[in-house]
Image (cartoon, rainbow, N blue to C red; front, side):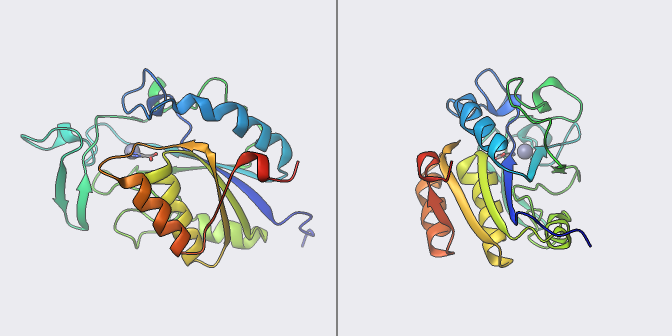
Length: 210
Ligand code: VGL
Ligand code: ZN
């Protein structure tokens, strides 16, 4: 087995056009995270990206539910689901990574939310909280145990990923100023509190080793 020279991995969550200004589900100033993330990509030996990747007519889209609007909720077989504008449809420009994101170095791109009937915020488990994406096995097989997360959106895909990572026993850090939030009804404050409670380290770009 090849020796692991660095057990840290940067996980860049959903830095896609639809989550940036002009996109279908724009997170306030989502594009602002790109320069800091590019610098982190440069510093890390191991880089993984996630890509929200929905088929047309996905069940997390409000348009799939008669009489529902974006940001309403629906009862799914796995519990309550927030409904979103159509976004990150497979193969569309909105699903592409931000054009300035320097992602060539990524060793793995994990796509999520591709099952029509279940959404997936976390990089580890779909929203039924049981269907794995395979990322846990990948990181374990490679001996990558120290996770640094950044990206979009802080209070949804980043927080769900960080909470799952901590629960799975990874050493987990979120670079908060290299993330931007959707912030629906206090979801950012709630996500921050949950992450702290779960032992996730919340840090800032300047506090990271150069
Ligand atoms: C996300 C809502 C729906 C995210 C993805 O990347 O945080 N949020 N799909
Ligand atoms: Zn989505």
